[in-house]
Image 1 (cartoon, rainbow, N blue to C red):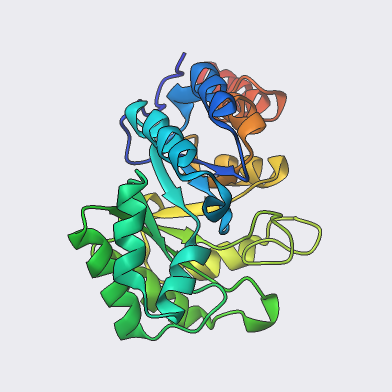
Image 2: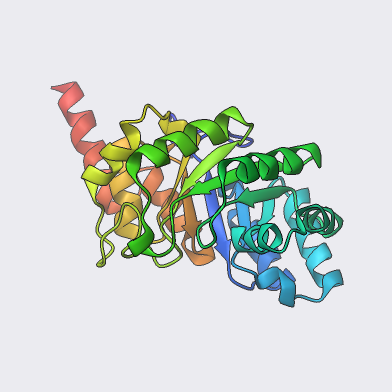
Length: 259
């Protein structure tokens, strides 16, 4: 381990972004001891950061960042800050609390191009790494594919490190997944038809079948997000071909080469 071709930390592709819905400091410490080598980003999702004791949150974030892992609040917080016109205060507060990365998204509110660009610029100027997200949380508000292409290109041009493809924490009925959580391969094709580099995208894929589909299609170093903490090692086993679903493919490919 790691298997040939698996990117080592610090890496810019093959990222695993963990979704944290409320882990305590001791739980985070256990997670890092057990699986820290395979975690690149921990997102304190939604607006959960608001409900921590501030000293606890600061210590938790320090533990994460000192372990070589980026830590970010959920994009919902930024949307609230943009809506309430308190972005500068939000970024200052996030920095004081020890966050290292900011998510810029408009999954719920409406955000025009200029406001989105300004949010990215301000976060970068404040010293954050910026990850953006495209897509709406309500499937009835799905964005036209041309706009998705434009947003991805513009965000990267404006300095975003990666762009997340929205699928929510459930991975059902949004983005590239249908209501049962099955992967819509034609939707992936539509997104990539805009010319985006696969390494610039993070696919939210909380379910095992979704992770498997993306790994089998794009390889072990595909960027994956919204991974539950308890699934990090299982995902890494999937990536590295020591889980039945991907081991079979590796075995067959190696056998074909020998023939």
